[in-house]
Amino acid sequence: MNTLNKKYFFYITLLLIYILLAPPSYASSNTEPELQSRFGDWRVFKYTANSKELCYIASSPVKQDPSDKAWNPNFFIKKIDDESHNQPSLYAGYNFKKETPVTIKILNSTFSMSPMDKHAWLVTKDEEKKLVEAMKKGYQMIIKGTSEFETNTTDHYSLKGVTRSLQELKDICR
Figure 1 (cartoon, helix red, strand yellow):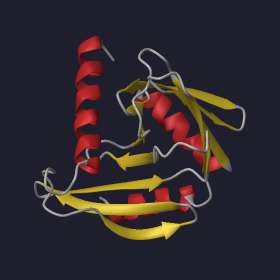
Figure 2 (cartoon, helix red, strand yellow):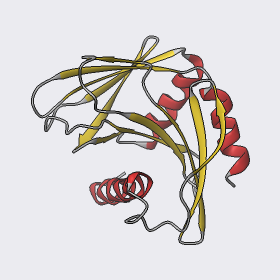
Figure 3 (tube, one colour):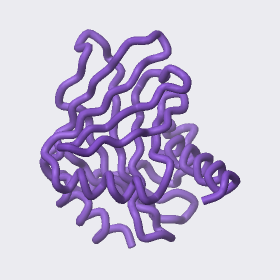
């Protein structure tokens, strides 16, 4: 993927995340996300934006360090309609320290996400596919980041229900 395509992909992803997280009065969607189902610690959502059906799954951490902070992160996997893959992303709830990677550890696999403001993404589709496969095999996902104030954070996500949620995502959003 050349540099122009990476930038285009990055900004489209940023726009999609903004649409997902924007307050209803500012969102360009016709409907708010509706909870379709819940499997373990994962939820499946569906909504319509500009006459287009969009779907994603989301989860919140089961444990956060430091525990005295209330940043309310969420991990998302969005189904990309015109492509055959799912796109993971993170909303941290705080601004990341610039040029500091966000790491994800699942079993013996480690992934690096690129942060921008309060969000983080994987850079390539190949890494996205590998992360989703690791999530299906694991039981826990640990995400580490550093805030703009140099606070090191560790969020523990349960992967219970992620495989069934991904199947439901595929089934309901075609």
